[in-house]
Length: 205
Image (cartoon, rainbow, N blue to C red):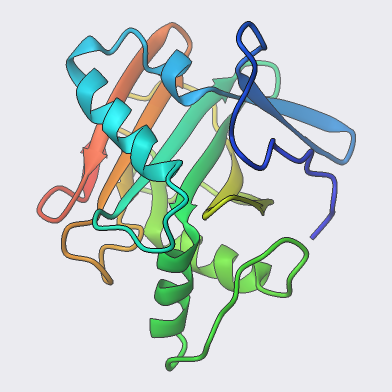
C-alpha cells in the first residue's frame, strides 16, 4: 500500500472556522471527504441520529454499547468516481477480521501489515452494483487511525446515472446483531442518507 494518505487530526477536533474536510492524497492525486455534520446539515430529519452517531464515534472509551459505522460517499465529477470514507470502531473491525480468519488475533494500527485483510473484508461487505446487477469495481486506497476508530478509504469509478444501482453495506453485521451502517451519499446536487441494518442490508440508489 502506498503511504501517501495525509494524516487527519488524531483527536478529530478542528478550531472554529477551520475548513471541515479531510484531504487524502495518493499517486499525485487528491480528493476530499466532507465533514460528517457539514455533509448532513440539510438532512434535518436525521439530525438527532447523526449527532448521536458522531458522539459515539468520537468517544474515547475503550468499549462501547452501540455498534455504528459512518460512511461518506461523494461523487467526484473530474475523476468520474465515488470517493468513499468508512469510519469503523477499531476494536469492532479487529473482531470481524478475527472471526473471518479462524480466531487469528488482529491489531489494527497505522503502517501495519493488515491492509490486505481489511481490503478483502471491505470488498465483501461494501458492494455497489449497477443497473445491470453487475458489481462495480472498487479500488482500495488505504486506511488510517483516529483515536479509537479506523478510517478506510475507497475509490469507485462510476459513470452514468444512479437509477437502478444498488448499494450493499453489511459491514460488521455478521458480528453484531445491532450493527447500523449509516451512509451519506452525495451525487451531483443530490444528498441522501441511508441506514443499513439487519433486515435492510441494501438500498436502491
